Length: 103
Image 1 (cartoon, one colour):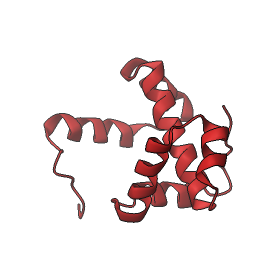
Image 2 (image 1 turned 120 degrees about the vertical axis):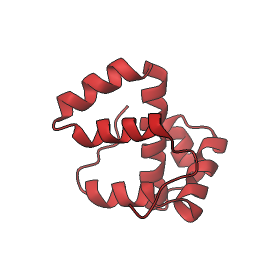
Image 3 (image 1 turned 90 degrees about the vertical axis):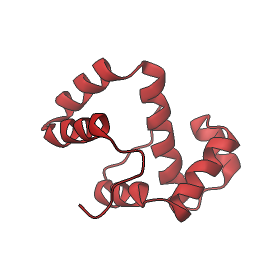
Image 4 (image 1 turned 180 degrees about the vertical axis):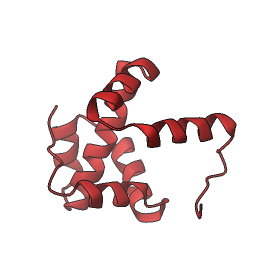
């Protein structure tokens, strides 16, 4: 594996293996339902929506209005898009054309 963040440990490795083992949307929904609070899932979904809109050069005001994200969240996602580990870019490239921004 080429990339491993400094926060990784045995527990996070287990989480990554669990995510990689999921085979269907239902499996993902079931794991997220058990693993995360509703607020945590909504926060992750919001960040992904923000990343998608930033990739489309949408303004901060429009993103905040559409997603309800704070400018601090938008700025953090923008920083990750520009200087992060390319996680957002990689997933957005994979789901290009499939992503629908819905609340």
